[in-house]
Image 1 (cartoon, rainbow, N blue to C red):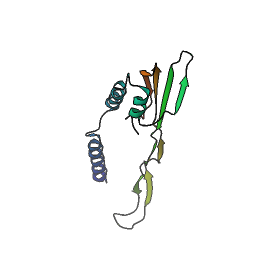
Image 2: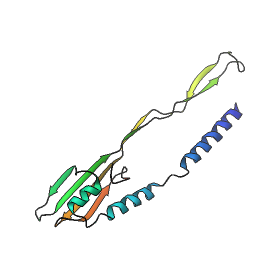
Image 3: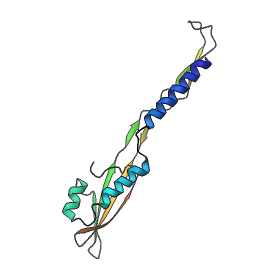
Image 4: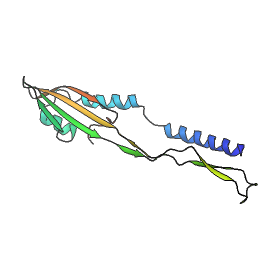
Length: 142
């Protein structure tokens, strides 16, 4: 029984490490996203709409003629969770000798919400500045 637990722990560790190989960090994704946006600075409104891939979700007109264009993305997904592992307690040997099977660990499916908001400030028809926030900001065009 101890050998089975050790093998399961080793297999889980190898799987976890293999999953992380080749993954970029959140900071790297955010830096790449910010770089994409920075490259759009100075674009006309039509050019900005092309680069963003769609019309904005909201537009605000300020008193001085400045316009704020806002895009929103919702990249939510369902994490499937993990079923419990069943451990047998009691009984005789490896056969159908009875005993009690008890679930251990596991967790249910979970909704993971990762939204993103990008705002551009348009002054005189040109993109002058931007602001973004959210955990789901990974690429400009959905």
